[in-house]
Length: 164
Image (cartoon, rainbow, N blue to C red; front, side):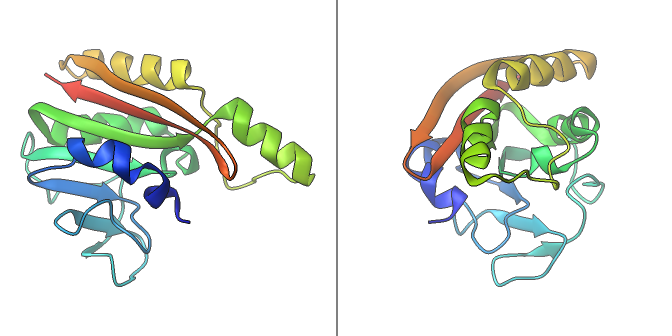
């Protein structure tokens, strides 16, 4: 099961209207989302960088969804600044991220380490960073949904921030 499929039922309610699925890979959160990824797959509508959304008008999208992407970016706070500029007032930043402790435990059991991750967030660290970045760019963010999704083949958390 894909990471997006694991969280879709909980997060789809925040993904309505005009939205972006950043780093969508092979599967978007919903068919109407504009899928952006660096490589072309059937789900990708725009091949390009998720860190450069200059082609998207500021405050023009209802949501940005991203699943298991932010941890792969070397400067996530810089990327979040770009993303927050694109979300309209009242819109949502919808993230599904690997939980530092749960994902770390899975890797430890497997005797592996994910060298593609620049950081491994906890929910508290991610919330703090997003709210700090929102404040820095003159936006306010309210965490409206948080969920620790752990169990069989699950080691992640949902985080939804409404942007004002």
